[in-house]
Image (tube, rainbow, N blue to C red; front, side, top):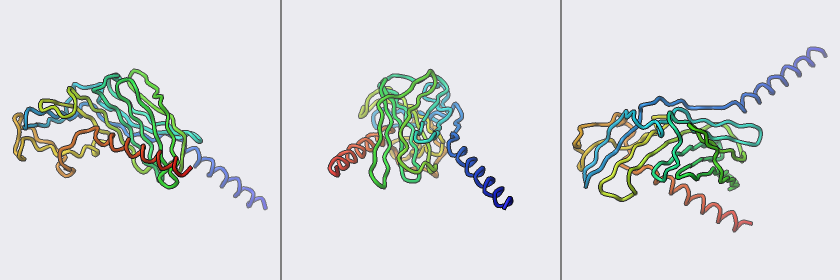
Length: 230
């Protein structure tokens, strides 16, 4: 009987220890000086990697933590968080059945979560800022087992659609950078002769931030569907 009681105690302790680990933060560290720069003049463009003079968008860490029924998303940079319309910060966390994300730009931002199974949605309009980090706290909607965690920060000099513009971006982890870094207009090198390195992840030239528009559209549709169900 004593052995049985000891076994029950040991199993209970293991369960408690396991619960402790579930609330521990999970993070992705990102080195500095790994900014990508894209420039365009007319119909010609060029890439430059390993730019180190943009600390305000140079991500050092992306993390999430779960504490009971709350989940916190956080992004840290080497410099200071900017409140500019030309700077965008983004964190994306995909759990087993729920998507959570954080965005911040021009002094405003928020966090959203959507359970893909039952269409439950949570959102907050306030983002907590410090000098070098931003975070948001959301309600947990489902399983919080980590599937995918990443973030990016982008700085523009002009608006979308200009024929003479440039931007800088950092992705954490670096594998999330999936742009075609071939310079020029027809697959040839551009004026600076700089070629990118992650050719195995090429997916064509795109503009960072466009994915954010698609996500917002998806959230709007989800809210409409949820209201109709009610």
